[in-house]
Length: 255
Image (cartoon, rainbow, N blue to C red):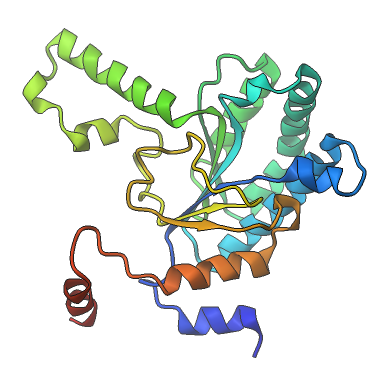
């Protein structure tokens, strides 16, 4: 029996993450290691996105959130940023029909204001096309930062206080959480970062509070279904306590 089939037969719904969040790191190093320009690594990374989306569908993951372009990535050389924007546009145009056909719901989080009209319109049309799809919920974070997310949520709450819709005593973690990106999704169960770095890098700072963290040296263009299965196996071995003792968790699990 193959490694891929074993995990499907042995894993219970409790052992399987409902929502996976990924920082896709290592495209540039993958290209440099092969004597190729950095854009070649980004183009190869698109193939990994395709593989991982399909693998998540296969392994019954409900939601996948990918950190595609952070608010800090604008600091990269302008030529590289321009190439990334062009790659985003060409990839969306090429992939959206296939995603729609396979029932994937696509949405974007982050500040869209700096993007070109062409990219913003393409993002919106992709969301409209796929918004009623019942399958994997694919979220792509573009010009996103966790600090920005929390600041935006705070601004919305401050406006509600100012308008008299709520009072200061109404503000609590639940209220703030409802104003954040991904509020309608279960919080990520599993966070994966490729490329050997062990940082969260301003990604989903609030939402990752109780997420299991998984770091791999595999560069993103080399990440495939077998790599995802390794992460899923690691997740299945962990005991998620959420402040409880291990004994309490085992009693609840066995009930």
